[in-house]
Structure formats: structure tokens, C-alpha cells
Amino acid sequence: MNTQLLQARQTRYVAYLIVYSAVIVAAVVIANFLADRYNKSYDATANKRYSLSDQTAKIVKGLKQDATIKFFDQSTRFQHAKDLLDEYANLSPKVHVDYIDPDRKRQEALEAGVKSYGSAVVEIGDKKEEAKSMTEEGITGAFIRALKNKTRTVCFIAGSGEHRIDDSERDGFSHFKELLGKDNYQAQSIDLLQKSEIPADCTVLAVAGPTRDYQQPAVDAIRKYVEGGGRALFMLDPPLKLARSTVADNSALTTLLQTWGVTVDKDLILDFNPIGQIMGLGPQVPLVTSYESHPIVNTLKGTATGFPLARSLNTKNGDKTTVEKMFQSSASSVATANLSSPAVDPNDPKNTKGPLTMAAAGTYNTGQQDSQGRFVVVGNSSWAANSFLNFNGNSDLALNTIDWLSSDEDLISIRPKPQDERRVTMTQAQLILVRTTSQFLLPLVVVIAGVSVWWKRR
Image 1 (tube, rainbow, N blue to C red):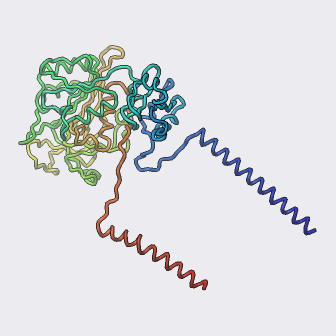
Image 2: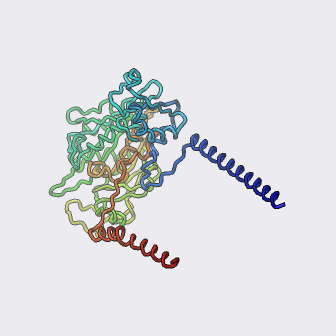
Image 3: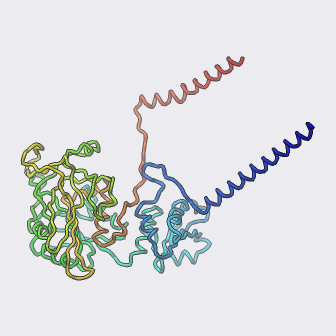
């Protein structure tokens, strides 16, 4: 009887073992099948270092035809690019990735125009664009160039003390020019003093902080351009009258803007927002953290932008224009009309209390279908200069503005961000504490615990 009972138990245990093993094997097979078919991951890093940006997702998911990313490198080095390129393939079934060894498929590499290892080419339809770098910016930039059939040019007016796109110093716009190039824009300078006419190949006209007055013929050329369906960005600084910083009133230009519904006030905004002080900004740098509803700023929610030495605006709709506010200074800001002294009294009763409009976007009705004029006015220009363009969301605001002006709203989003380098900085005392704890205290605790257990079991 005992033998039969024992055999029955053994049979039952064997059956249990077989069933449990079958369940585990089935679970592993299903998990691997799902993992192979649905590649999902979670990025827990603070700056989403291992995730593609909103702009990339918007472009890739919006593809209307198949796209192929061809990566050319030695077969032993394919893995270096696989993690990044597979992210693109996971965004849309229309994206395919081919890994090609140019040594084995020389003809295909020659047809793609590839001259070096580690290159990627994006093919959409009959268009081929090589990525400028094996980063998200480089790959997404190739997608943008392949999708856009036209050459887009941003023309910066020069000759009246504006920021120069070839200037790499703090006040220059060379970084802005580089940023535009990554989004497939060409940047060039034009001089309205030589010829008061906007070139026909200008997609967007940029007035970048002139310090001297524009002559009437130049203003008339700008008027004709926008009212004929052109697009323009105006960045105008406060007309300061200090010893080392003098900015002209530019009355002819501001009068033109006023006829379109934007009055540029002669004042200086001082922002006493405590958040700005925490970020190391003085009151002369208004900090913006909330935005109105407009395509340019809709994606900037929760992102801060800063504007050193800014002026306020007043807006209204005109006969042929529709003007919308984009963002304002905080409620703790004031605007002073004292522009001739570095000493400003924040408690002066003559100051205008915030919030104050700092940027506006408008459209001009030309009366012709698909020929709408557009303009953006910002009461500051240094926010796009080399020294401040990389501040939080300033670069996104700059490119979003250009994209909206050029009617490329599909590109408006948060761009790929450079990877943060986070280091732990400790004092000498903290280093000694860490070293003492790791090399002596923790091992000593383990030894004491071991001796204690041995003593109890002795």
C-alpha cells in the first residue's frame, strides 16, 4: 500500500513538473515572440537621453510613403548604429533600415554617394539625403531635407547695426545660422542700403536688433514684401540711451508695425520673478514660463525662455491684419520708461505693472488665395544671440518661429537636445568621507557581523 501511495505521489509530482515546465517554456516563447514583434522600452533618464524627440516622432509618424535608412559601415560595426536606427523603425512601419557593408557592396555605396564608413542615407521616393552626423539631429535633418522639395532661405538684413550671422562672438548670430542649417534653411545677409528691395528667393526676412534707424526706402521695401505675401521676423531692442549702449528709436519701422496692429513701446521690462533669480537671472532678463495658444509656442509648455533687455508690446487687430499674443512677462514684472540711466527704481509709481506682452504673431490679408503675409514681433533680439540661444527653450522658440513664418508648421516641435553631462562635484572633506566609508567602515561592518554570527553559533 505504501509503495502504491509513493508511486502515485511520484507520478503526480512528475506531472506537476511537466506542466510547470511546459507553462514556463510557453511563457518564455510568448514573451520572446512579443518582444521581437513589439519593441517597447522605457526611458527613465531625466532628459530622455535614449528617446527620440517630439519633432522626430511627428515627422516619421506622418510619413505618407515608405522611407529607407541605409547605413554604410563594416559589418562588425553595425551595432554602433543599430540602437538609434531601430528607434526610427519602431516609430512607423513605413521606415525600413538596411545595413550595408560598402566593401562587399561597393556599387551600392557608390550609387548612394557614400565616401566614408559610418554614413547613413535616407531615401524617400526618388530623393536621397545623407545624414550630416550619426545623431538624431543628423538623421532627422536628412528626413526633413528629403521631404522638402524647395530651398528655403532666411534673409537677415544688415547694414544698420544688426546682429551678424557670420559673427561667432557673444552678440553674433552664427549659432542661429548653424541651427537653421540643421533644419534645411539657408541663411544669408542682405543690405537694403545698397538696394531697397527684398530678393525674391527670401522665404523669411529677419530684422535682428538694428541699433540705427532704417531709412524710409528700406521700410517701404519691407512693407511691400509682407503686404505682398512675404514673411518677416522683427526683433527690436529697447531704445536705450546709455553711454555704451545706444539704440535708435527706428520710428519709421515701428510706425509700420503699428499700422499692422503692433505697437512697440519705448520701455524696459524688469522682472522680479523669484524663479528667474533661482536660475541666476537678474531683473533685466525677463523669464517666460507660460505661453498663449499659438502654433509657435504650443509645444513650449513647461519650458522656460529668457529675454535679456526686453521691451513691451501692445497689440490689436487691424483692417487687414490679425494679431495674436504669444507670451507675456510675469505678474511680478514692471516696465520703466527710464532708458537713459543704468539706475532704475523698481518702485517708481510711473512704472507699468506686468504682465506685459513681449511677443506677438500676425497675419496680413493680401486678398489673394494662398498668399497670406505673416509677421512676428519680439521686443528683444539678444535672446537669439550666441550667448543666450542655448538657454532652455530659446533655440526651440527661434526655429518654431521660422517654421511658422515659412508655413512649415509640421516641423514645429521640440528639437533633439544635446546630451547632458552630469558630474558629481565634492569637496575634499566629502571625498575623505566617501573614501573612509567605502574602504573602512563598510568592510568593518561586514567583519563585525560575521564575527557576531560565528560567536552565536560557536
